[in-house]
Length: 106
Image (cartoon, rainbow, N blue to C red; front, side):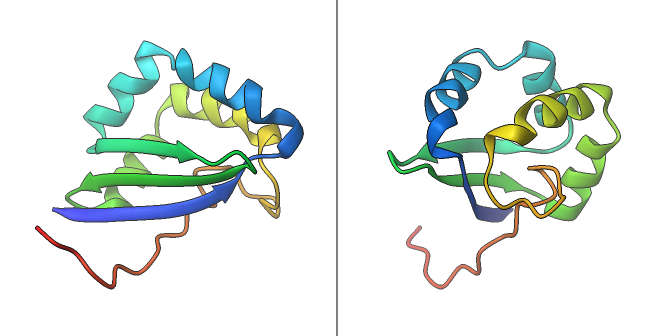
């Protein structure tokens, strides 16, 4: 199982909206993530907008491609994109750049 961690930054003026949207993630989005191989997926948000994401998957690239092919993901990314800083023209899911794991205690 591959462990994946990534960072993004939520715009300071949109943090509460981001929290609210994630308090009510669409059931079809959750189902698509699970079906695409995203497991133990967590998002952690610091008060300054730093977002840390963590998930486990067999193959992150394959899991991303599977989600990219879903209609619900296209809608979710379109609605969420304006909440983030510095995406440089990418959707939030495209801007997830995995960090290199340097230590793990099992």
